[in-house]
Image (cartoon, rainbow, N blue to C red):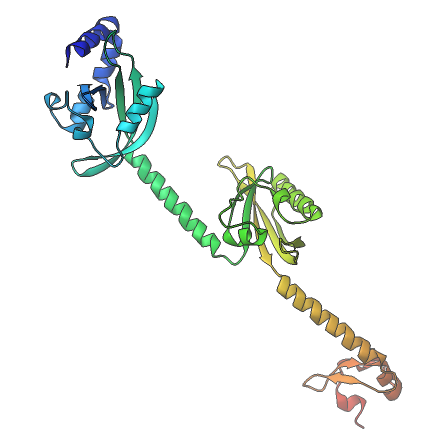
Length: 324
């Protein structure tokens, strides 16, 4: 150490022996650094730092930090931020020790220097490699789950107690008309292109499901899309629970049945037109038979011609009614 540093260090020892005990007894690696000759050098290290680096203390003092610690991201900017701002700076850094990467939570604390001496920084490190590994696994799990729900052929969204969107899949985003680069998290149905009546209906259903803790399945409802078209939906709403079992959100799974609904409506209209034509012919007896020659349709003219009512004819064979 240089003279100023030794004087300052001795002053701390005399005035605050409990701080020195904390420094010496801490299991967290700690060092003091100071800007000297255009570099940040270590001016003191605690025993935990020596053990962590597996380097004798004599080889650490007055050495540049960058010469001792191999890092993925330079530490100097964090040191300057703490010095210039006069406030503690915290960050996560990756340090290579013995060719093995460690994730560390680094804390840089400015320490005013003695009169006439340059200020110092106390730097502490905490190994958070296990936490980072868990965080990485969680991130990968979330990403995998997102990929799965993005490929489900339904629109999926989940909302909190206030019907605020907290997550969704790609299909739901596509149906909103929003750009794929925009996030819907934090938005509500009020921000979507649906009509005010549809929005009120959706949110009322959300509240009912969360209040009763009972799913609502196969809800048939319509929805106004961003392009002005109207879709028909089959919706399922399922309450989701927090760790303590209370309902904290609702999962909404939406199946677009517009094509099916349109086909059913066209078929119904076709059947109605045919029935109107079938029943409207008053002078020609018209019947329909299945492959077993059983009556499945019998118009009013057939009643008058053959003398059998529709109720009497239905289900009977052709030979029993017309062929003598």
